[in-house]
Amino acid sequence: MRTSPNRLLATTFGAVYLLVGLLGFLVTAGVDFFATEGGKLIIFEVNPLHNVIHLAIGAVLLIAGLGSVRASKLANSTVGAVYLLVGILGLFLASTSLNIIALNGADNVLHLASAIVLLSVGLSQDKAPVARTARS
Image 1 (cartoon, rainbow, N blue to C red):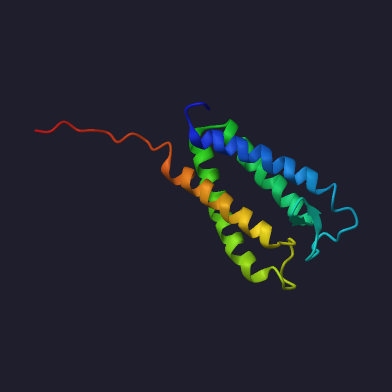
Image 2 (image 1 turned 90 degrees about the vertical axis):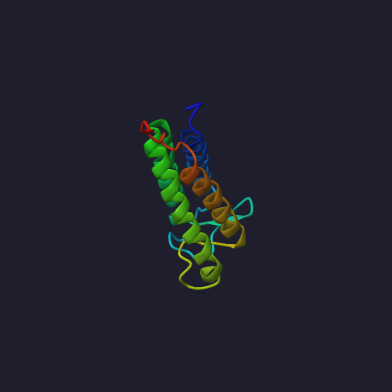
């Protein structure tokens, strides 16, 4: 893992998102599963669905990070792309009834920042070496 940026990032982000998912349940007692406004976890709003999503993403990243470079690269790129989409959509959904994961401005910033980091590492690091052929 020390030589793979993708494995290190997936493992770290996975552990953090698992922790955030668990901590989120401490502040969402009495909050509806699909509530458009959730409990406050520091400056972020979460509802039970949001917590479950954090747990799922954390598990995917952690399992991939503890697995292979290929798995962590795929997980980082995929989760990064999903977070990019969620970050952009969140800008438009935050104050509507379609906001079923209780997004707020801080969530959008965090999702976009996570997307940039995950996509940057997932798409640029741990490239397979190019096979060289002998020139005639």
